[in-house]
Length: 103
Image (cartoon, rainbow, N blue to C red; front, side, top):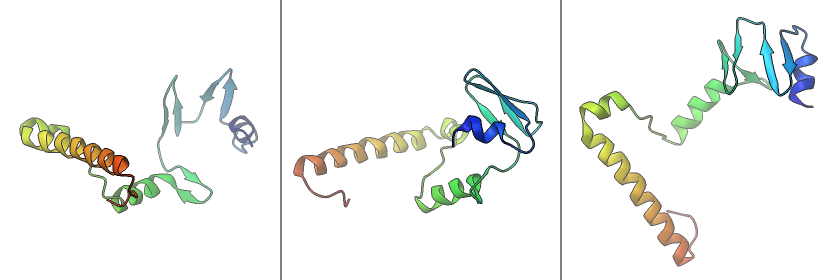
């Protein structure tokens, strides 16, 4: 099923397709050239996508950067950059050694 058929078969029919653009008359969904903004929850096959992404981020211990704090404490930015540099270095070493991806 294509995006076009999903939207055009929508019960609410708040969306139209013009070329490759989706135009919404709904106050919940705003579409521009390269951005779709949804005011509310996006539920896909019964799964709240926003909650899923938050849980995934937490599970993978993905640290959200705080650029305002980094401006105030430049060492945080240095450590962040250093971590990513070292991570890439060790990944490359593991690849060269031919070992598994168990870091």
